[in-house]
Image 1 (cartoon, rainbow, N blue to C red):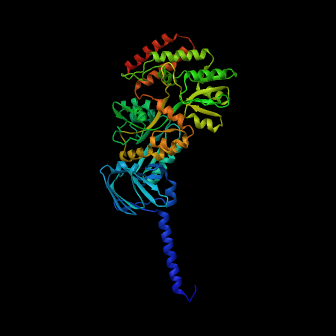
Image 2: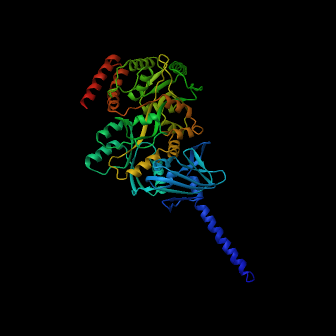
Length: 504
């Protein structure tokens, strides 16, 4: 210490303390957030910016984060007061709690934050005060399945750390079966569970789910909502989906098929491949899952009939199967189940296969030289071979112990942030339309997948599809092996399907 300048030393020390305090405040956050007058602890500035993702604004897409992610689950909210560079912005709305998931904090170019709410941009944000009722629920159980469980668990941990709600995430291979067993045994149900559309009829028969029509879903795929709508009500929200595509070996097929290619083009390509001594085309013809796409292209008006059944002997199905039999006879097409098909495609023996978009990351991982095309048009009808869109979604248990938190978590999972991160990591198609638009420049298959979504059909949620799929799985083997004549086999399939539906 310099004894001659004790005052200067104290001033410097005081300035250092003030500077450190200022830096500490700045590192905590650039603005203050409070709920009912109580300040919310926010991530520090660097961490908050790292949490941001692409959000839609009047300028296109900018980096931001939904305001709802920084608050606990709210039962109701009615007032938002925002102090900003030019004064005070006040928003009073009885449905504010439902809207906060679409109010975004935006990173401004000058290092400050803006609030973007319902098309209004408030610049230079200094503080945000919310008035509302917070849910007292502090724990959720969520059942997860299918691909991406580790990534989903990471998303749930992120939401838990920001909102303060504990989330118990459980990997359940068959959520439908386990939930029905739990209900029969009087066990504890989950709050939120993943399902697919053909689970819906069984779960509704058990009165296991609550309707979700109260939730704002305008950003979600209309086809995705149809996949989970039964008896006039919405029972789950679509989360992501896969679509069928034509995968082709780019060493054997060097010119990409155009978006509007036809079955005639497919046949010409197949003939050129056959001339090279390779198998042109393969897929699992024994599965009705693939048959329905071609039946639609050849004129089947819809997958299910008004009575909920799925007819197997319509003219479109007959024509589709006749075309397939001719393709097999000509040597253009070989029927193979998935493992054999993929192995031979990977080895270069097969030039084209039909598979789901879920195969993209697998083929990229092993370094295959491939590209994808949407399904072609049927020249005779002008209709596309319509890929089936396989939606996975989240439903809320009717017996949920934390229904408010479950709904807010569901809204978060279907929001643009999770939808971008999860679907990009897993090569899935997001159910949120704005998330899909944000991926336009980063997904090299965007055009082909968008076309598939446009022309695709939703797997119907009724019981009829499950009955049809199981019976046609057997009947297709008789048809393709020519053990039964086509018309006889389809007539027998119709009889079996009708008998099964009557008995249920």
